[in-house]
Image (cartoon, rainbow, N blue to C red; front, top):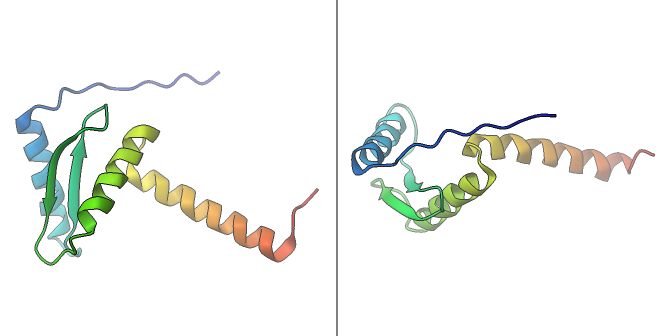
Length: 100
């Protein structure tokens, strides 16, 4: 049986500010500007930041992405992997039909 463990970190103002700044700094190094949302364990928004040049709708997308990652207890990049796998499975089913 697999046991999962989680680490609980108190998200103080200083930690949240550092998280947002780290995301902004990372985006400025060879990446397009982004919208950032930090949520707590209950999914409540603690901070939001939309960099210059980012569409307004990105605020909502960022909040939903953060809340989904929180609910799934995984990093958002994990959802990209799942979506890629699901897309390939869907394409295979469409092409070949279900395998008994």
